[in-house]
Length: 185
Image (cartoon, rainbow, N blue to C red; front, side, top):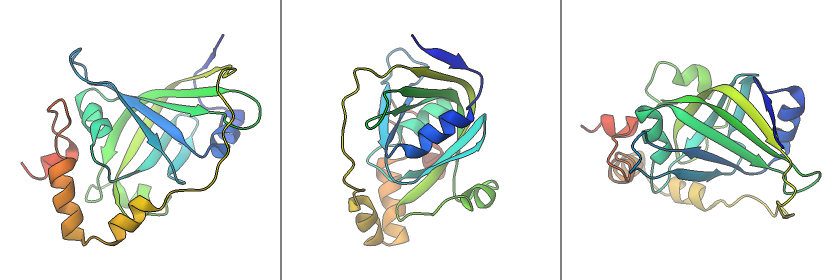
């Protein structure tokens, strides 16, 4: 059975820092909307305090998490032990989107290596932390990060990236306007 905590403990931080991938889950309030689960690679997560984290969000073919945060703020992170002792760790919280032109960007962005294709920061106040056994999670070996997105973004101009985001990242698949989309309305 799982154990619930009110904040991220030092042992959780140690576990999180060892993981090469994490997953972010979100959903709109509408029961007709889609639940989104998005994998995140690279060194994009920062733990600011026992109840505050953020990650650098890279350009993708959709922007569901951003839309869901506008809709209701709910977000869940999941970390899995693919190596070493088994464990699953989840962070539950409320998040917001921080765009490069927002007042908070400079203060938060200084904690990250801004990668090609970066589009926004997701800043989350953690309300609950839960660990569970992870006994059925298989072992996987880490072979390295893909550089496909960074190569793609490096070969685009800022205008090309803005046009792509306008087309692909402005409205969620459920029709929710994202913070990026608000710039184009």
